[in-house]
Length: 298
Image 1: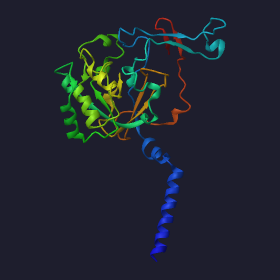
Image 2: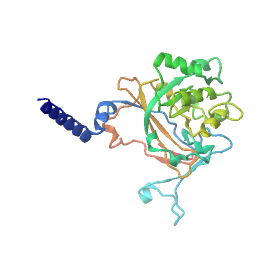
Image 3: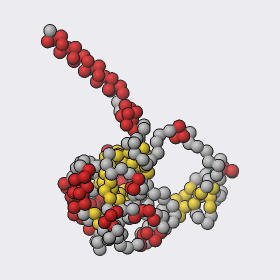
């Protein structure tokens, strides 16, 4: 009797396992991701966005046919293309690989594919900035956050909300001081005590110390970081995921990145997957080149 029961149970488990294998992760998409709210935490890259003076501005131009020297156009060629003369790989919303400071560690193209999706935590220092516009995240702020929201999970991405990015794309942001940051002690706590994947901040630098001690410590210990993130005021503090995308530029010491928060369906902000995702809606205003702005606009 026991042998037959064991055999029957084993058969059921085998069938369940086969069903799960056939379904794979599609059920995760159907049950959790299909109805989720999606929030872009990424700035648009343009020729006039804030950038460190040491890098200088970038230029956008129409791509030209090398045979004729004429720009490709919708009317003449049936398509258009754009030439990007980017001054740096430290531009806009970024993912800094450790090779940015430490050549013995991975460059952007050497980062593993496991960076794709992670738990997302958003810690706000907005109240502290009302008293001190140069406030940097402290260990006590992380501990207070955990007391309210629970322990930060290992492998998570932690973004620090300051609302600094609300003034984007004002070019003056790149020289505005003081600006909010993240203390070295907070970075060490997050990485050595909570074992996060990486942290991110809204400004274009980690801290305001003369040597950028926080960024230096991160890079020289093999850690990455996100810079120039946006829309953190629209993201739930806990319970969301972050989808991470970046181009694999060979030997890249920086990376133009896109971060998308994936939040529960009940969250008040964000877009949902819908019928207009494919095909995409047609615009009444065609895209065209604007000589004055140096970019394509509608």
